[in-house]
Length: 130
Image (cartoon, rainbow, N blue to C red; front, side, top):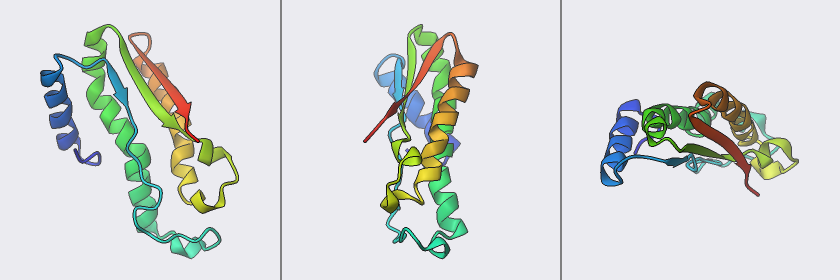
């Protein structure tokens, strides 16, 4: 599935729901740290607008789109859960991941938003990864 493409996401969610007769759980685990780009910690110029947009698309827009597409199936299950692996790098001093940090930091806010709009039918949590 291409998590930047709403059509691809919808097709994947439909396929999973067909295979498993519904959808109870979504884990938004896909993400990119550098995507093959060399991003030195202290070189702001290396973080081009194109790399920034790619990182935000994969790490923030992707989980939003996948959650949005899965929501009807999660509601129908009567036990819907979304888990977003979270932003320890967004709140820590880890230099090598600094360009990655803003996108992962946004996951905490995205989780709170999804939890508010999907409650009470769907529970949404953020689980920090180290």
